[in-house]
Image (cartoon, rainbow, N blue to C red; front, side, top):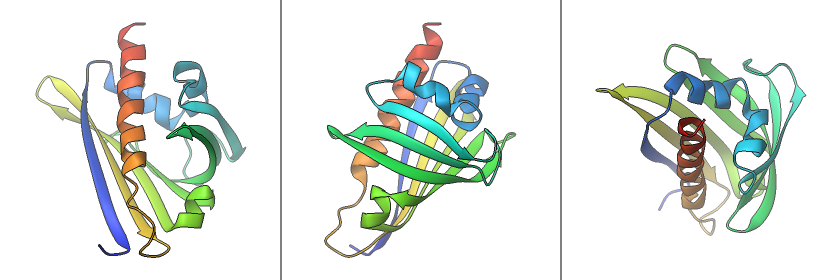
Length: 151
């Protein structure tokens, strides 16, 4: 496989798509209360919540290991319910020259579909594709949706 790649996940949600978008765009700091087993902290380092160019520090658990990554909010499109995070500091950068995660919510009939797209460039051929991060995003989607539906 090459050094660059793209992974995509689509998950149907039952909860409100606007609330879901708001959680990842403007209120990601609420995630540790919703999914503490996955997200331990989301701290604003620079800028304002829900603003392009803001820098956010994420503490999370993946495959049983606690990790930290610093991201910049690269893009927000409220009409398309889209947010893009670009990693620039932390453990991800040790393995990937570039790592960008986009969450986008589309209508599919009467339902809403959460689409995660992970674009990456590995530091070298020995680095695995980030399938575990796609699984984390899918699990996060399901857990946040369950939380919203049960509220």
